[in-house]
Amino acid sequence: MLKVIQLDKTYGQNKHSLKAVNFTAQPGEVTAIIGPSGAGKTTILRSVNQLIRDDGGQILLDDQDIRQANKAELRKIRHHIGMIFQNYNLISPLTALENVLHGRLGAKSTLAGVFGMYSAAEKAEALSLLKEVGLGEYAYQRCDQLSGGQQQRVGIARALMQHPKMILCDEPIASLDPKSTKIVMDILRKLAQEKQLIILINLHQIDIALDYADHIVGINSGEIVFEGASGDVDDQVLQRIYRQAAQPEQAVTANEQ
Ligand SMILES: Nc1ncnc2c1ncn2[C@@H]1O[C@H](COP(=O)(O)OP(=O)(O)OP(=O)(O)O)[C@@H](O)[C@H]1O
Ligand SMILES: [Mg+2]
Image (cartoon, rainbow, N blue to C red; front, side, top):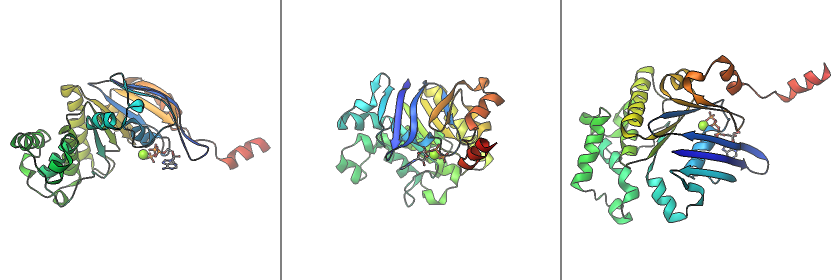
């Protein structure tokens, strides 16, 4: 289980981006973080795998506080956290299979990684993961010759190659059409259920979040304003999550009245 407790992040001197953020994400479930642009969704994901340093709190993955890990421990923990990005982050001249094999890099010595030394078993596993995401016949195709939806599926197979406990997805479907969106979200939900993974997704599309996520975390201006089952999200909850902060000029007008 992922347990985020009282997480704080301030960029610069006084720009409070996360304010005492608390939430949990369970294995076997898709957890979606929703909220307006600038609310702090990406900041949460980047803190969870310590790509940025937060300013306080706890991030417990199976009871181990990621924030307290030393460099070597963090490397080990990160190896079991897959990342999926809006822009796929694949290496384009390489084939789908080579990109998936890159998921093993964190588990190899630098030398073996640099020279692309992968065992027959690793190659067989990468191929089988590509088949699992429906891309068996594209294994030897260059990634820049794949559609966006196909590239995102290569990204998922690459994350699975890490044998992850958890996959963090930052806007994984923002660049995809409805058909590819469905394929990618179906795969993520199936992975959560069948492999008992923690899947934590930042999403802008409310309808997709409510359709696919078991658990919803709503954030507004760095504060969690809702956490609960997707079935419990109603119009009132959505208003709370998406309410706009009063603009300074509106505040002035209100004072003058
Ligand atoms: N590197 C940075 N330096 C300073 N401020 C930052 C930095 N990254 C993010 N912020 C600020 O922190 C707040 C939260 O940003 P974040 O990117 O987490 O929002 P988000 O919810 O992911 O937004 P979006 O939906 O647009 O991706 C914003 O006000 C943003 O301007
Ligand atoms: Mg973001």
